[in-house]
Length: 289
Image (tube, rainbow, N blue to C red; front, side, top):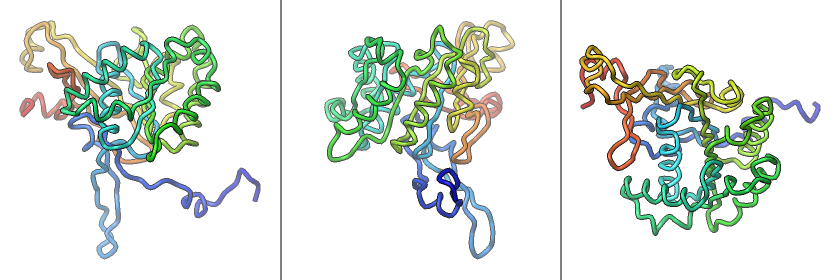
């Protein structure tokens, strides 16, 4: 056969093992699962995966202040605490500010920052026009950064935000995302791409800057949204006072594992930690216990 044609029996031998990579977000790990067949009964069994599927590229999208960057930072410090180094590509803020945010997220999760700070490498694209405008050079830089960790190589990459790489040239979005997606697959890492919505986008959709370029290419998308409580009936329905914000999270799809497709209530604690709670229907009926 040609070099671009391969039997599934051969391709499966090259596939990475499927297991969960801890998200660092309380309540989120349980929303991914796999199915197995009981050989004796033929029954299909659903088993929790315990996190993002290893080797997946997940897109987290939402309007400003919905918790996207917090989730990215929680993932990074959690994986570092597990002993797995992380490459954090910052496109929006300089490296020193990202480092401070990571330190705060570690403290909020009860993780000793001094034990993990050398397991996170920050690539400062925000301060480097060359990397921001040349996606192939950025891919090479990410690949080179993987090698600095010993004895364990980096197995996780965060890009916050990927939409910052094609601002003012959204027609290039699909090409830029495809290059970085392929890089993540070649490196065999689990990756988070953070993407920004425009004010004209529907909050519950997977669309972001660049249209559906990100969500069409990646392995899965998590949509974050928020609703300001402004009417009396909303206070009764959503159990929140006037002026408060109801935050929600929904997994919009995942190619590599099963997932809960319900809309879940989420919150950002006083210590700046994102937590995922019950489904919206359960919350309206029984509250967050």
